[in-house]
Image (cartoon, rainbow, N blue to C red; front, side):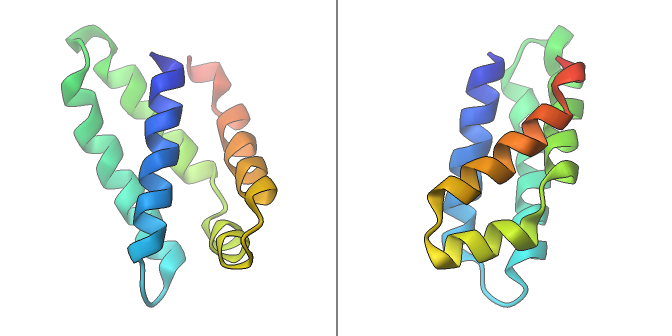
Length: 94
């Protein structure tokens, strides 16, 4: 389930990044936060709160400006590194 949450977050980030316009980093972050709020409704009630907190942690720990820059340059390794770092920061919430 945790792996699914990370994968879904990563996919949403990529999808939203492609449609972001002015001030892409703020737009991406806001969209990811909104995804965090919607996602737990699909999970069993007992894990909703914990998963939502972890998702929000990952969003808060993500350097969206660096993510936008890496996406613009096509540096997939850097994108994965940024996401991995944010995920590692929030591992304690699992």
